[in-house]
Structures are given as C-alpha cells and as structure tokens.
Length: 169
Image 1 (cartoon, one colour):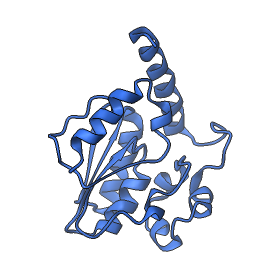
Image 2 (cartoon, rainbow, N blue to C red):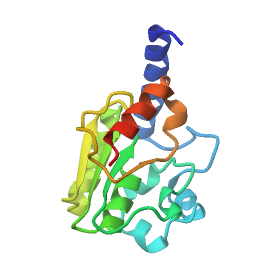
Image 3 (cartoon, rainbow, N blue to C red):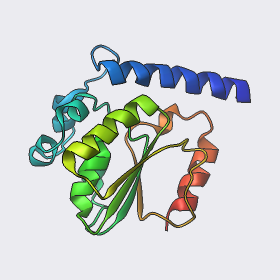
Image 4 (cartoon, rainbow, N blue to C red):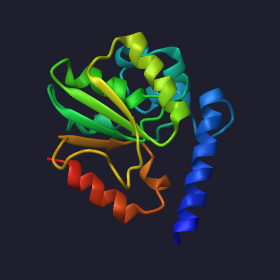
C-alpha cells in the first residue's frame, strides 16, 4: 500500500468516526452501544458508571478485559480509544494507583472522551490525539496495550505492531 493509499484510508476512517461523534445510529453492520457492550461480557456495574454519551458510542468488537491481563496499579494504553469506553472501564479496573492513556486519530471522538473524563472525574485517564503507527511515548511506558477493533483499520500494521511492542514493558 502506497503512502497516498494510507492517507486515503486514514481519511475515510476519520470521516466515519466524525459521523459517529455526531450520532451513533446506523453506521455499523454489527451491534453497537451499551447493549453491545453488555453482550460482549462487560459487567453491568462497570458500564452503568460511564456517561450515556460514551456508552452510546461503544463500537467495540470484543472485551479486552475478559482476558484477565489487567491488574490494580497497571498502566494501560488504549489504542483507538474513541469516546473512551475502554479507557474508562480500564480506569476502574486499575484503580487510582493505575493509569490509562487513550489514543485516537479523531479529535471529535476525543472531545467526547474528554467530556466523559470530566464527568467521571477520572484523574487517572489521559487522552492523546495520535496514530498507532507513531506513538508519542517513551519505550517501556505501559504494562498492557488494548485495542477493541482499531488494529484492523490501520493501514501499516507492521509499523503499528513495532510501536506497540516498543512502548510495552
């Protein structure tokens, strides 16, 4: 794939998530929103604590927390955090001694995540506009990296994987 193809794919993805930031209705061929998250095994108690605007924009394809790799005090990198759903669930899982940093390409989705962070008072959540292929973090910065569907959208997967491994401890 050429650099111009990468740019075109990135712009198409950004366009879809700009639309999602305005309304989650009818943009995906699979279930979305709170009901989808509950169906994927997210605990109702964790989900109910999240702002409605964040719950409505859940478009994950799995539940990374069902894998059991996240513990109290861990530092999580949420790749393609969107409106912040997994970042805010992660913040509850790692507790106040832990930290979650969500990265996303879409400033519109990050704006929703920032409103959610303010509503939750989630001081242990950081949000950053960035590409997974070029993460703005020092090496060995995170204990765990999670992704809920973004890796399939990335045009340069080898670069993304190199970056993910670079920032993991």
